Length: 515
Image 1: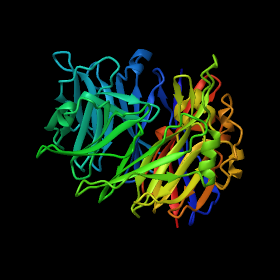
Image 2: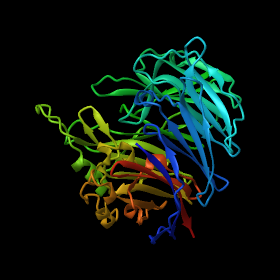
Image 3: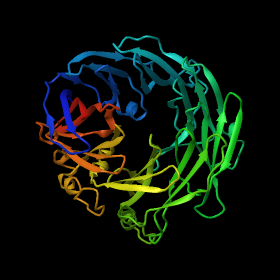
Image 4: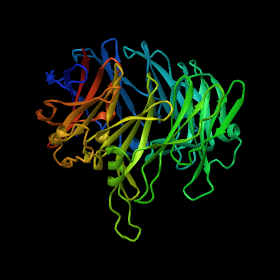
């Protein structure tokens, strides 16, 4: 199948104090680039010095794609006018698979997973310059990782400004978007020069055989933070514990939490670790509850867990009345609407933003981001400030889950979101959460619009549409999963679409300008 990469020119969106204005769109020229292999994957690396970079992952066959074995990577650079400045093929070590790329101001750092000379799974890294030049050869930095069946290998995060936090032998839970480690999972800390500073099994750190799983985070002071979950005394009840580990001094301090839910989310500010959970509901009559608890980072003492009530506002009523429960006596498994806490984020003003996604579960298959998104703002003590619902209906998730994602970013203290939607939802202003437009037609992606919603720090709500995207010569639709926007409002978009037998791609930049 022939795939053509087209270049979309600059999209300018202007608004002042979250007031919606029309979107001006102008189109660039075709680049004429051709991709001849099986369906590739794209990654938007971001913008540097006014230029933007895209990575194309090539797979020689469907088996390699399933195993994430890239036979070739192509790095592309475009200037602000969408002129292609260069393409550079980067060929990993034979049999290796690309894992992740980190973007710096003067280079990219690529990580690969491959095999070493003894056929053990190994981790490699390589420095690539901004002009596509290979500044270093692939360097093996770990090869002690036999992977158990059903477990994932090598999750890599940057923390403490210049260190890499690596874990492997973990399980990824799609429903809660969490990486869950067991006592045999390995944790490694690499320096900026890729020297191992620390390496250990989780169990050797926690010294607790009753832990079901741990979540791992890098604290901004360089320490490691563990959220440990163990079985509770009652059914569907769990014991949670937060622990901080200084791998240099070997100091390990821990404290039990008052939250007994299985799924905890974590964030941190200068003075506190903050834990929040959305209560699991097993019965229709159960209330919608959020639990909040914080830990003082200096004393490592915790306040009592408190309950954040949502039952007395429109959003909470919507969650309570919309969530569906399965009928255990029914032989037919129907799709269910459920809600889960996808993430929490500490803001500069001290408040905490919670994001709750409406999702669809069909049997064991979990399809997230199919419906409305609820945002709850609480202060640093867990006191409710405001909540807003973004109404959306996106059934693309049944065939293309990535297109049902939401691209979120922040400019000037305000939050913005981009997503596929239907035009009827432009009538929704965030004040009536029960407003639900009809589902998007899976067979006609050109009926989708690309909608944006802005929410100010005080909860002021505004929305608009990136016009003309659905009226192109091809039936294009937006893929939020493969787009990035930075804190200055500048970013890169990827649009895709189907025109009879051809699948087309359009790449371009977008700029949200705040006056």
